[in-house]
Length: 248
Image (cartoon, rainbow, N blue to C red):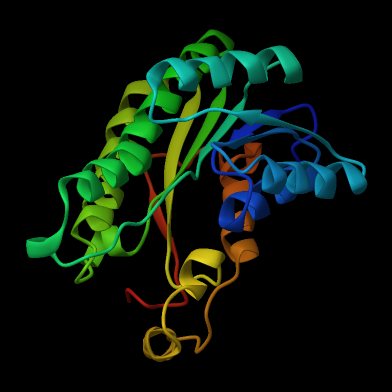
């Protein structure tokens, strides 16, 4: 049975979208959850209230994952408040779309810092805790565009492809310590981020989905929960698509 009682999880970018769905799902399965956010304290608190209102345990913790010191403090604070850090879900991410020849340096840097360096910072900090316990689950949120690319998203695609390579390397490093490291590659998921796209573009993307509909944050969350559990103890270094067949 899928359950996470007695486990403590940190979900970066947990204040909204896929991150919120993952935090709520993990908590619903019995995990204590640290909901990380950078600036939107209101949204983070809403996630916490959704969890606690259903009888779960959660705390909102502010930290900019692009800063190594803050990422380390996030893990240390979560350990103190939750009693441990058994699960890390790296979900914090941003987009700064634009054609390559018009892309500003800061648009490239900000996306790589958040989507890739943030994963590195948090994973490094959490791994130190998990290695001592000789048990851990790390789930990184990549994207299908890290596999096949997307025009106008050179920075985002590069960051998500980087997460895939990072996941495989770290899985090889940490496997002997009882820590699994996997990545989820969502496809077209209905979130605040994708709803900013034009209706025409959303319709075009939906046409590419074999199952004929956009995914939901919960579609991703349930896989994250499985990968965070004992049921997935023999799965590591994998990149698993939740994309309705869009990459097939």
